Structures are given as C-alpha cells and as structure tokens.
Image 1 (tube, rainbow, N blue to C red):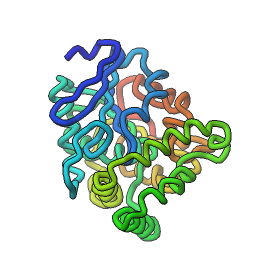
Image 2 (image 1 turned 60 degrees about the horizontal axis):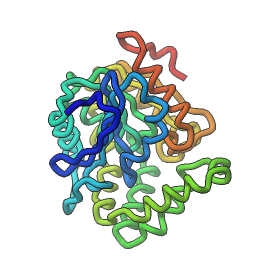
Image 3 (image 1 turned 180 degrees about the horizontal axis):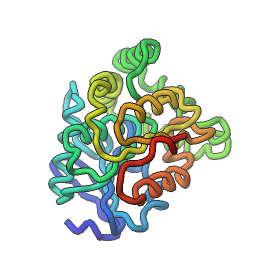
Image 4 (image 1 turned 45 degrees about the vertical axis):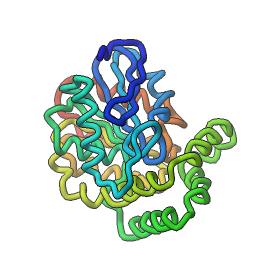
Length: 277
C-alpha cells in the first residue's frame, strides 16, 4: 500500500478506510454513529504534510457490523489490524468522542507505536448524574427510541448559530445518523457509555505527548472532563475551544485542524502543562 498516494479508498478484513496526502502518518478515529466522512473538512485543511488514514469503526459505515455485544478491545483490535495491514509501524493518533476512547485504549496497549495523541471532545470518568443520563440513552436506543433521539443529539452537538447558518450540514448529519444500523449502533453505543469507567483507572499509563481538547459548551464531553483527563495523563495539555459544543471537527474544522497541526508539528518532547488553557 502506497500511503503517499493522493487519495485511495479500500476495504480490508471488513474495515473500510481512506488514505490521502503525503508526509507524516496520522490516523483519525471518528465518533459513535458517524463514519470516516466526518473528518472531510479537517482533512482538507490538514492534508499538507500528512499521510492521513481514516476508517469506519466496527459497526459503522462501510465496515463490518457483526452482532453485539462489542467490547472496547474489539475496536482496539480493529485499529491494530488495520495499521498492521497498511504497514504503519508508528504514527500519530487522533480520536474524536468515542474514537477518543479507542485512541486512549490503543495508547495504553500499544504506546510504543505512537508519536503523539490527540483526544477531541472525549468523555472521561463520568460522574453519577452523567452516567445515569448515558445509561438512560442506551435503554432508549434498545427500546426503539433511536430515531427520536437523533434530533436531541443534534441540538447538543451543534451551536444554535451554526444550526441556523448551515442547515444543510446539520441535515446531512441527520440523514447519516437516521440511516445507521440500529443494532450495531446500540452495541457500539454501549461501549461508548461504559468504556470511560474502564479507562479511568489506566490513563496514567499513556506515556506519549497528548493533547486533550473539547468545546467550552460541550454538554457531554465537558471542559471539566477534559481538564481532569489532561491532569491524569502524564504528558498532556488541555485546550478548550471557545463557544463550541460537540461536533467541533464539522463546525470549526479550521480551528480543529490548526490545533492538531500545531500539536503534531511541535518540537519533540513532552508538552508544558503550564501552557494549558
């Protein structure tokens, strides 16, 4: 596989992927219910100087959708197999939302393969009220309330001003979410709802330089979570994106791409926690 090729779609061992650009290898992992297409605007802005690999997680998009239940380890195994297949011995890793949980678990299990780690809008160690809310959402999905919950999710994910200014983008995300395989989504969403508890006791094992970022108004992947996560990871810094909610890679791709590029292209060494905002 020539990762320096301008762009190429592929399917290997049940995983759909796309590779584009030329330069240092970077892997992007999407959030629950989305697919590799959510990164399009970020990739357009980040593409110079990077070989970017995107893929659909297990149960999503064009990847295989086996019956559940799923485990976090299943998603780590998928990422491991894909990067092995494509000859990526070492790379930088960017995970969004549930993709951030997968990225954390991969960094714990295979940290020697990573240069740097970026965790965008990622949950961490939910408190009892937050855990109760996500568990209720899991029950709703399993009871047939998935479609009804999509609109509420869009309200949480986008700022009101963006929804008014870009209804076509919001509509595209709505269509994508509404077309998901509900059984596979429920299996993946259960992992999303529970894996932060599993990881909360292990994040100190992440030894690579790490950027943790979220929106100032993200209601589920909160700034408080981001700051606590960055405090626990030995070589991490935190950035809070002003005025933003959850789907920052779609709503503010310029800012997200700039954050990623600045962090990945920084000089070698651990970031300075004192510079965190």
